[in-house]
Image (tube, rainbow, N blue to C red; front, side, top):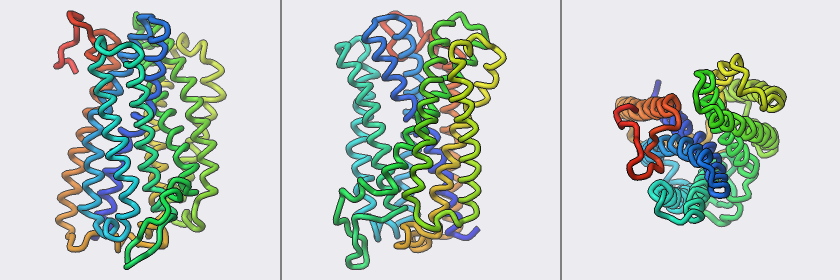
Length: 387
Protein backbone atom coordinates (compact mmCIF):
# COMPACT_ATOMS: atom_id res chain seq x y z
CA UNK A 1 0.00 0.00 0.00
CA UNK A 2 1.09 3.57 -0.56
CA UNK A 3 1.46 6.10 2.24
CA UNK A 4 -2.12 7.36 1.97
CA UNK A 5 -3.62 3.88 2.18
CA UNK A 6 -1.40 3.03 5.14
CA UNK A 7 -2.44 6.21 6.96
CA UNK A 8 -6.10 5.50 6.28
CA UNK A 9 -5.69 1.91 7.47
CA UNK A 10 -3.98 3.09 10.64
CA UNK A 11 -6.77 5.47 11.53
CA UNK A 12 -9.48 2.96 10.61
CA UNK A 13 -8.02 0.19 12.76
CA UNK A 14 -7.27 2.38 15.78
CA UNK A 15 -10.63 4.14 15.65
CA UNK A 16 -12.39 0.79 15.32
CA UNK A 17 -10.56 -0.63 18.33
CA UNK A 18 -11.31 2.52 20.32
CA UNK A 19 -15.00 2.36 19.46
CA UNK A 20 -15.24 -1.16 20.90
CA UNK A 21 -14.58 0.43 24.31
CA UNK A 22 -16.79 3.45 23.67
CA UNK A 23 -19.92 1.59 22.62
CA UNK A 24 -19.77 -0.62 25.73
CA UNK A 25 -19.21 2.41 27.98
CA UNK A 26 -22.26 4.15 26.51
CA UNK A 27 -24.35 1.07 27.15
CA UNK A 28 -23.21 0.11 30.64
CA UNK A 29 -23.18 3.61 32.20
CA UNK A 30 -26.98 4.13 32.25
CA UNK A 31 -27.54 0.49 33.26
CA UNK A 32 -25.29 0.88 36.30
CA UNK A 33 -26.97 4.22 37.13
CA UNK A 34 -30.41 2.58 37.00
CA UNK A 35 -29.26 -0.22 39.30
CA UNK A 36 -27.75 2.26 41.73
CA UNK A 37 -31.03 4.18 41.72
CA UNK A 38 -32.92 0.99 42.60
CA UNK A 39 -30.53 0.36 45.45
CA UNK A 40 -30.77 3.93 46.77
CA UNK A 41 -34.57 3.77 46.74
CA UNK A 42 -35.05 0.23 48.06
CA UNK A 43 -31.94 -0.38 50.15
CA UNK A 44 -32.02 -4.05 49.10
CA UNK A 45 -28.69 -5.91 49.20
CA UNK A 46 -29.53 -7.51 45.84
CA UNK A 47 -29.63 -4.13 44.11
CA UNK A 48 -26.39 -3.11 45.80
CA UNK A 49 -24.73 -6.31 44.60
CA UNK A 50 -25.96 -5.72 41.04
CA UNK A 51 -24.63 -2.16 41.13
CA UNK A 52 -21.21 -3.33 42.31
CA UNK A 53 -20.94 -6.23 39.87
CA UNK A 54 -21.94 -4.43 36.69
CA UNK A 55 -20.22 -1.28 37.93
CA UNK A 56 -16.93 -3.14 38.21
CA UNK A 57 -17.26 -4.32 34.61
CA UNK A 58 -17.94 -0.72 33.58
CA UNK A 59 -14.89 0.57 35.45
CA UNK A 60 -12.59 -2.06 33.88
CA UNK A 61 -13.78 -1.13 30.39
CA UNK A 62 -13.52 2.61 31.04
CA UNK A 63 -10.02 2.45 32.53
CA UNK A 64 -8.55 0.54 29.62
CA UNK A 65 -10.48 2.55 27.03
CA UNK A 66 -8.94 5.86 28.10
CA UNK A 67 -5.57 5.02 26.53
CA UNK A 68 -7.12 4.18 23.16
CA UNK A 69 -8.80 7.59 23.10
CA UNK A 70 -5.47 9.35 23.62
CA UNK A 71 -4.08 7.61 20.54
CA UNK A 72 -6.99 8.95 18.48
CA UNK A 73 -6.18 12.55 19.40
CA UNK A 74 -2.47 11.98 18.76
CA UNK A 75 -3.08 10.84 15.20
CA UNK A 76 -4.57 14.15 14.08
CA UNK A 77 -1.17 15.76 14.48
CA UNK A 78 0.80 12.72 13.38
CA UNK A 79 -0.89 11.78 10.11
CA UNK A 80 -3.52 14.41 9.38
CA UNK A 81 -1.94 17.81 9.99
CA UNK A 82 -3.47 19.01 6.72
CA UNK A 83 -6.90 18.66 8.32
CA UNK A 84 -5.74 20.48 11.44
CA UNK A 85 -4.28 23.32 9.38
CA UNK A 86 -7.26 23.72 7.04
CA UNK A 87 -10.17 23.18 9.44
CA UNK A 88 -8.65 23.05 12.92
CA UNK A 89 -10.46 26.24 13.97
CA UNK A 90 -13.81 24.54 13.27
CA UNK A 91 -13.15 20.82 13.68
CA UNK A 92 -11.05 21.40 16.80
CA UNK A 93 -13.78 23.30 18.69
CA UNK A 94 -16.05 20.29 19.46
CA UNK A 95 -12.99 18.12 20.08
CA UNK A 96 -11.77 20.64 22.65
CA UNK A 97 -15.21 20.66 24.28
CA UNK A 98 -15.17 16.86 24.41
CA UNK A 99 -11.74 16.80 26.03
CA UNK A 100 -12.01 19.71 28.45
CA UNK A 101 -15.66 19.50 29.46
CA UNK A 102 -16.96 15.98 28.99
CA UNK A 103 -13.85 13.83 29.37
CA UNK A 104 -12.39 15.51 32.46
CA UNK A 105 -15.77 15.87 34.15
CA UNK A 106 -16.61 12.24 33.44
CA UNK A 107 -13.31 11.08 34.94
CA UNK A 108 -13.79 13.28 38.00
CA UNK A 109 -17.32 12.10 38.73
CA UNK A 110 -16.33 8.48 38.10
CA UNK A 111 -13.50 8.84 40.60
CA UNK A 112 -15.91 10.25 43.16
CA UNK A 113 -18.29 7.37 42.53
CA UNK A 114 -15.57 4.69 42.79
CA UNK A 115 -14.04 6.03 46.00
CA UNK A 116 -17.26 7.42 47.47
CA UNK A 117 -18.73 4.10 48.63
CA UNK A 118 -19.44 4.47 52.35
CA UNK A 119 -17.96 7.99 52.36
CA UNK A 120 -20.40 10.16 50.39
CA UNK A 121 -24.05 10.68 51.38
CA UNK A 122 -26.33 8.19 49.64
CA UNK A 123 -28.01 10.60 47.25
CA UNK A 124 -24.80 12.48 46.44
CA UNK A 125 -23.14 9.17 45.62
CA UNK A 126 -26.07 8.31 43.34
CA UNK A 127 -25.80 11.71 41.65
CA UNK A 128 -22.16 10.96 40.79
CA UNK A 129 -22.99 7.92 38.65
CA UNK A 130 -25.76 9.80 36.85
CA UNK A 131 -23.32 12.64 36.17
CA UNK A 132 -20.87 10.04 34.83
CA UNK A 133 -23.60 8.87 32.47
CA UNK A 134 -24.55 12.38 31.34
CA UNK A 135 -20.94 13.41 30.72
CA UNK A 136 -20.27 10.15 28.83
CA UNK A 137 -23.11 11.02 26.48
CA UNK A 138 -21.92 14.62 26.29
CA UNK A 139 -18.53 13.31 25.23
CA UNK A 140 -20.13 11.17 22.52
CA UNK A 141 -22.23 14.15 21.41
CA UNK A 142 -19.24 16.41 20.83
CA UNK A 143 -17.40 13.66 18.96
CA UNK A 144 -20.43 13.26 16.72
CA UNK A 145 -20.56 17.04 16.22
CA UNK A 146 -16.97 16.92 14.92
CA UNK A 147 -17.59 13.86 12.76
CA UNK A 148 -20.82 15.29 11.35
CA UNK A 149 -18.93 18.40 10.30
CA UNK A 150 -16.71 16.19 8.15
CA UNK A 151 -19.82 14.65 6.61
CA UNK A 152 -21.58 17.98 6.06
CA UNK A 153 -19.47 21.13 6.66
CA UNK A 154 -21.83 23.80 7.99
CA UNK A 155 -21.39 26.93 10.08
CA UNK A 156 -18.07 27.85 8.43
CA UNK A 157 -16.58 29.80 5.54
CA UNK A 158 -13.26 29.68 3.75
CA UNK A 159 -11.09 32.65 4.73
CA UNK A 160 -7.43 32.97 3.84
CA UNK A 161 -7.29 29.42 2.57
CA UNK A 162 -8.64 28.00 5.84
CA UNK A 163 -12.05 27.15 7.26
CA UNK A 164 -13.32 29.70 9.76
CA UNK A 165 -16.14 29.06 12.23
CA UNK A 166 -18.97 31.59 11.91
CA UNK A 167 -21.94 29.78 13.45
CA UNK A 168 -21.39 27.26 16.26
CA UNK A 169 -25.14 26.72 16.49
CA UNK A 170 -25.12 25.37 12.95
CA UNK A 171 -22.70 22.65 14.07
CA UNK A 172 -25.14 21.60 16.79
CA UNK A 173 -28.09 21.41 14.37
CA UNK A 174 -26.21 19.79 11.50
CA UNK A 175 -28.50 17.48 9.52
CA UNK A 176 -25.74 14.86 9.65
CA UNK A 177 -25.86 15.03 13.48
CA UNK A 178 -29.49 15.25 14.60
CA UNK A 179 -30.32 11.65 13.67
CA UNK A 180 -26.89 10.03 13.79
CA UNK A 181 -26.26 10.86 17.46
CA UNK A 182 -29.43 9.12 18.71
CA UNK A 183 -28.47 6.23 16.43
CA UNK A 184 -25.14 5.91 18.26
CA UNK A 185 -26.91 6.21 21.63
CA UNK A 186 -29.24 3.38 20.68
CA UNK A 187 -26.31 1.24 19.51
CA UNK A 188 -24.57 1.79 22.84
CA UNK A 189 -27.64 0.81 24.85
CA UNK A 190 -28.13 -2.29 22.72
CA UNK A 191 -24.49 -3.33 23.08
CA UNK A 192 -24.31 -2.85 26.86
CA UNK A 193 -27.62 -4.63 27.34
CA UNK A 194 -26.59 -7.62 25.22
CA UNK A 195 -23.37 -7.95 27.22
CA UNK A 196 -25.54 -8.08 30.33
CA UNK A 197 -27.84 -10.66 28.71
CA UNK A 198 -24.95 -12.84 27.54
CA UNK A 199 -23.13 -12.73 30.88
CA UNK A 200 -26.31 -13.53 32.79
CA UNK A 201 -27.11 -16.40 30.42
CA UNK A 202 -23.61 -17.78 31.00
CA UNK A 203 -24.06 -17.82 34.76
CA UNK A 204 -27.57 -19.27 34.59
CA UNK A 205 -26.40 -22.02 32.28
CA UNK A 206 -23.72 -22.91 34.85
CA UNK A 207 -26.52 -23.32 37.39
CA UNK A 208 -25.22 -20.50 39.57
CA UNK A 209 -26.50 -20.19 43.10
CA UNK A 210 -27.11 -16.48 42.37
CA UNK A 211 -30.28 -17.26 40.43
CA UNK A 212 -32.29 -14.17 41.37
CA UNK A 213 -29.30 -11.91 40.72
CA UNK A 214 -28.75 -13.09 37.17
CA UNK A 215 -32.45 -13.58 36.42
CA UNK A 216 -33.08 -9.92 37.18
CA UNK A 217 -29.97 -8.92 35.25
CA UNK A 218 -31.03 -10.90 32.20
CA UNK A 219 -34.53 -9.45 32.21
CA UNK A 220 -33.19 -5.92 32.65
CA UNK A 221 -30.80 -6.53 29.76
CA UNK A 222 -33.57 -7.78 27.47
CA UNK A 223 -35.77 -4.73 28.15
CA UNK A 224 -32.92 -2.26 27.56
CA UNK A 225 -31.77 -4.21 24.48
CA UNK A 226 -35.27 -3.88 23.02
CA UNK A 227 -35.25 -0.14 23.69
CA UNK A 228 -31.75 0.20 22.25
CA UNK A 229 -32.38 -1.75 19.04
CA UNK A 230 -35.66 0.14 18.48
CA UNK A 231 -33.86 3.49 18.77
CA UNK A 232 -30.99 2.26 16.62
CA UNK A 233 -33.24 1.05 13.81
CA UNK A 234 -35.56 4.05 13.92
CA UNK A 235 -32.86 6.71 13.81
CA UNK A 236 -30.77 4.55 11.49
CA UNK A 237 -33.41 4.92 8.81
CA UNK A 238 -34.14 8.53 9.72
CA UNK A 239 -30.51 9.63 9.28
CA UNK A 240 -30.69 8.89 5.55
CA UNK A 241 -32.45 12.26 5.34
CA UNK A 242 -29.11 13.89 6.16
CA UNK A 243 -26.92 11.79 3.87
CA UNK A 244 -25.16 13.63 1.07
CA UNK A 245 -26.19 12.63 -2.46
CA UNK A 246 -23.81 10.07 -3.92
CA UNK A 247 -22.24 9.16 -0.59
CA UNK A 248 -22.95 5.45 -0.89
CA UNK A 249 -21.95 5.13 -4.52
CA UNK A 250 -18.72 3.71 -3.10
CA UNK A 251 -18.94 -0.09 -3.41
CA UNK A 252 -17.27 -0.88 -0.06
CA UNK A 253 -19.50 1.58 1.79
CA UNK A 254 -22.62 0.23 0.09
CA UNK A 255 -21.73 -3.38 0.96
CA UNK A 256 -20.94 -2.49 4.59
CA UNK A 257 -24.20 -0.57 4.87
CA UNK A 258 -26.27 -3.35 3.33
CA UNK A 259 -24.76 -6.09 5.53
CA UNK A 260 -25.14 -3.96 8.65
CA UNK A 261 -28.79 -3.23 7.88
CA UNK A 262 -29.66 -6.86 7.16
CA UNK A 263 -27.99 -8.22 10.30
CA UNK A 264 -29.37 -5.33 12.36
CA UNK A 265 -32.91 -5.97 11.15
CA UNK A 266 -32.59 -9.67 11.94
CA UNK A 267 -31.33 -8.92 15.45
CA UNK A 268 -34.11 -6.39 15.91
CA UNK A 269 -36.73 -9.00 15.02
CA UNK A 270 -35.17 -11.53 17.39
CA UNK A 271 -35.03 -9.09 20.30
CA UNK A 272 -38.42 -7.44 19.79
CA UNK A 273 -40.47 -10.43 18.62
CA UNK A 274 -38.79 -13.33 20.43
CA UNK A 275 -36.70 -12.31 23.43
CA UNK A 276 -38.98 -9.57 24.78
CA UNK A 277 -42.22 -11.62 24.68
CA UNK A 278 -40.40 -14.54 26.36
CA UNK A 279 -38.70 -12.40 29.01
CA UNK A 280 -40.36 -14.31 31.88
CA UNK A 281 -39.18 -17.74 30.76
CA UNK A 282 -35.79 -17.01 29.20
CA UNK A 283 -33.91 -17.34 32.52
CA UNK A 284 -35.35 -20.87 32.97
CA UNK A 285 -34.91 -22.13 29.41
CA UNK A 286 -31.32 -23.33 29.45
CA UNK A 287 -31.40 -24.26 25.76
CA UNK A 288 -31.67 -20.54 24.92
CA UNK A 289 -28.65 -19.55 26.97
CA UNK A 290 -26.09 -20.67 24.40
CA UNK A 291 -27.90 -18.62 21.76
CA UNK A 292 -27.93 -15.55 24.00
CA UNK A 293 -24.21 -15.96 24.70
CA UNK A 294 -23.49 -16.32 20.97
CA UNK A 295 -25.35 -13.05 20.27
CA UNK A 296 -23.12 -11.03 22.63
CA UNK A 297 -20.43 -10.02 20.08
CA UNK A 298 -22.90 -9.17 17.29
CA UNK A 299 -23.67 -5.60 18.47
CA UNK A 300 -19.92 -4.83 18.48
CA UNK A 301 -19.59 -6.13 14.92
CA UNK A 302 -22.59 -4.09 13.80
CA UNK A 303 -21.21 -0.94 15.41
CA UNK A 304 -17.89 -1.27 13.60
CA UNK A 305 -19.64 -1.96 10.30
CA UNK A 306 -21.74 1.15 10.79
CA UNK A 307 -18.64 3.30 11.25
CA UNK A 308 -17.03 1.72 8.18
CA UNK A 309 -20.07 2.55 6.07
CA UNK A 310 -20.22 6.12 7.43
CA UNK A 311 -16.52 6.85 6.91
CA UNK A 312 -15.76 4.95 3.70
CA UNK A 313 -18.81 6.48 2.08
CA UNK A 314 -17.20 9.90 2.43
CA UNK A 315 -14.15 8.97 0.35
CA UNK A 316 -12.25 10.55 -1.29
CA UNK A 317 -13.23 13.53 0.88
CA UNK A 318 -11.95 14.20 4.37
CA UNK A 319 -14.37 17.15 4.54
CA UNK A 320 -17.18 16.64 2.07
CA UNK A 321 -16.39 18.57 -1.14
CA UNK A 322 -14.01 20.85 0.79
CA UNK A 323 -10.84 18.87 1.55
CA UNK A 324 -9.68 15.57 0.10
CA UNK A 325 -8.11 12.85 2.22
CA UNK A 326 -4.89 13.20 0.23
CA UNK A 327 -4.68 16.92 1.02
CA UNK A 328 -5.49 16.27 4.69
CA UNK A 329 -2.51 13.97 5.15
CA UNK A 330 0.64 15.28 6.82
CA UNK A 331 3.42 16.13 4.35
CA UNK A 332 6.71 14.28 4.48
CA UNK A 333 5.32 10.95 5.69
CA UNK A 334 6.96 7.81 4.35
CA UNK A 335 5.67 4.26 4.11
CA UNK A 336 8.19 3.14 6.71
CA UNK A 337 7.11 5.80 9.20
CA UNK A 338 3.42 5.03 8.88
CA UNK A 339 4.01 1.26 8.91
CA UNK A 340 6.01 1.52 12.12
CA UNK A 341 3.35 3.61 13.86
CA UNK A 342 0.59 1.34 12.49
CA UNK A 343 2.26 -1.75 13.94
CA UNK A 344 2.87 0.01 17.26
CA UNK A 345 -0.65 1.39 17.62
CA UNK A 346 -2.37 -1.83 16.57
CA UNK A 347 -0.18 -3.89 18.92
CA UNK A 348 -0.87 -1.66 21.93
CA UNK A 349 -4.57 -1.09 21.26
CA UNK A 350 -5.13 -4.71 20.29
CA UNK A 351 -3.46 -5.82 23.52
CA UNK A 352 -5.64 -3.44 25.52
CA UNK A 353 -8.77 -4.79 23.84
CA UNK A 354 -7.74 -8.38 24.60
CA UNK A 355 -6.91 -7.51 28.22
CA UNK A 356 -10.20 -5.65 28.57
CA UNK A 357 -12.33 -8.57 27.46
CA UNK A 358 -10.26 -11.12 29.39
CA UNK A 359 -10.71 -9.10 32.60
CA UNK A 360 -14.43 -8.67 31.95
CA UNK A 361 -14.80 -12.38 31.21
CA UNK A 362 -13.06 -13.23 34.49
CA UNK A 363 -15.31 -10.88 36.46
CA UNK A 364 -18.34 -12.50 34.82
CA UNK A 365 -17.07 -16.02 35.48
CA UNK A 366 -16.27 -15.23 39.12
CA UNK A 367 -19.68 -13.71 39.77
CA UNK A 368 -20.75 -11.06 42.28
CA UNK A 369 -18.60 -12.27 45.18
CA UNK A 370 -15.28 -10.77 46.27
CA UNK A 371 -15.60 -7.56 44.24
CA UNK A 372 -13.21 -4.67 44.78
CA UNK A 373 -15.72 -1.94 43.88
CA UNK A 374 -17.58 -0.78 46.96
CA UNK A 375 -15.95 -3.35 49.24
CA UNK A 376 -16.37 -2.57 52.94
CA UNK A 377 -13.49 -2.78 55.40
CA UNK A 378 -12.79 -6.41 56.26
CA UNK A 379 -14.90 -7.76 53.39
CA UNK A 380 -13.22 -10.77 51.69
CA UNK A 381 -11.95 -9.91 48.22
CA UNK A 382 -10.69 -11.99 45.36
CA UNK A 383 -6.89 -11.67 45.05
CA UNK A 384 -5.81 -9.40 42.19
CA UNK A 385 -3.86 -12.23 40.53
CA UNK A 386 -7.10 -14.12 39.97
CA UNK A 387 -8.01 -11.60 37.30
